[in-house]
Image (cartoon, rainbow, N blue to C red; front, side, top):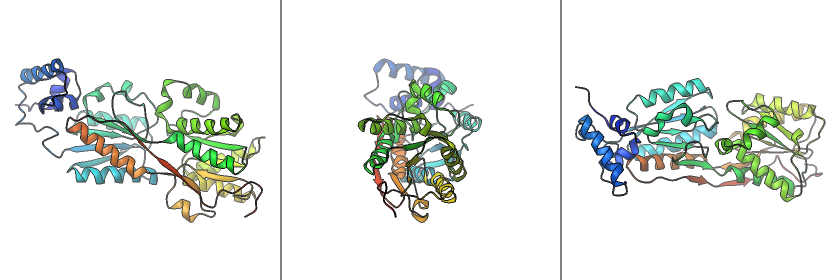
Length: 353
């Protein structure tokens, strides 16, 4: 005989696994009609809780989907997930997509047809996850890093609006007025400002951290009576090479800049290298702030002013919220605070180092 699982019950009842878990664990907050629907499906399928342990009865196995592990941003998130899951007696399988949508799709399909109890999704940019994988509603899931990706599920993310605002505001205090912003997307679907604005002004806005950082950037400029200059918006990547190429493009444009905002310290090293080759002094002529940094931000010369993101905490809270779902308890969004760390790559305009 084929063993009936709670996934089978969820599919028959047309509800999520977390709902089935709550019903089977007699959670009093479940709607009575919905509970009866689940119990009816369980009876029809001959489900026996003793024969198939629920998530609340066993440690379980969860999956973490993310773009890459070469960046300290995601390794810190993974560490937070793994440490917290271990405390809960859970195993974590890390799945690296290399920012490839087909690879990501393959992982999701695999998870939907396996014995995994839940997913922490920190995958590629975009808000179409439910459109591509409607069956995800039957599996407990938490979205990490981004917000507004899946309706009705918990999202754990850094305050990226404040990230963009805080960095831009500080540069403005340093009398920088021509601040370039390097916008980064994992999927590289957006490569020009017109397309960027079209997606930015759509419901997909919250699904990409780059949009939130742009919002903060615009807010800080507006407070100083400044408008966004499209010539100072560039579309880059997350690597040293991408930073170098974007700095080349920036210098080739007719508009001068006196500050640059970049995604991470790897990208910033590429910008620093190009500026050094061209005889541009950092931080006197051009100041640089990166939105996220690790050890590299301390060892380059000059050291990099950055927005400190508590990525480990993103992982911790993601695992905690998923654990709530697995035990049939309510889960919620968590927004993680950020802070400005001032180092050697920024200085008051006009002052030599």
